Length: 376
Image 1 (cartoon, rainbow, N blue to C red):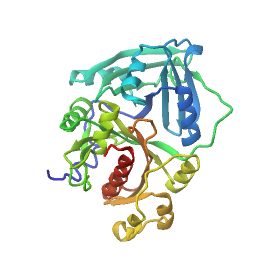
Image 2: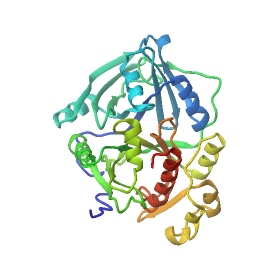
Image 3: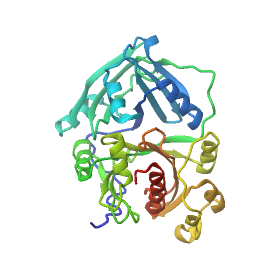
């Protein structure tokens, strides 16, 4: 396969039938929402925002919303057996169920998506309280992941109708996380192009980058990836599929333990990755480690950078450069018992790419973790 390194960096001028303003929220189905909220506050520096559950008239689930700058996470757990939420957790473990997208018109977004072949999840529904009204609708995407379209221009409440403000005494300081940079989906072998076509035909996204099994490979494993982006570039979804290799790749391990397709990792941006990672490590967040040899001749590979190489080496932060600038990135270990979802911390200094020059070092680090788990 030939490598397509830059299909269309600038898609802002593409005609959009589904304008998207940004990521509204990410909802994770988790076994214990209260404890998960405490973890994301303590380890990652999120703040208490909103709550829905028995005290707000919700009988089947409990949800805590935590926020850091423009990032909002909903942690949701079932309150009874036999529920769809509980079944999702039984099947997949903790993981992302909803990627909510902020739109100006949730009804039009839904109608446009359905007319282009999307599978229905939620009809356009108006939800209201004393603070105004919100319109939401939704469609399925890969696996059981859904996109909820959120129209909130007539709402002035804390989060959404049905939620009340969640105030806590314990609110640790933030760690400098700013917004969702991109979210990566893992799909089965042979299905990457199907979902690339979905995002292009159903949602008007464009392919901006592509990596084949020569770009993303080690001695033992390989995968392929294509990056889809909406018109303003605020939403970027790399789609991964496994490629043939000598041993089980990280995508295959994910698919085995998640028992299906789903969100592999959430990349969150910071303006100072050294400060952010230092703080995250002090709170117990664990990161993948690359060999010290990665930092030998680093400057000859990426050119001049503002950061001290020794500091980057001590923290395990990776660097890569493209035609527009450079980026710094680091990846956590998986955050759940199943080796599935993890986080990426990224700082962009002009670069629009995704760290192609780091793929080999990163995936060898992942393979070392797989070997420890006995799943390589």
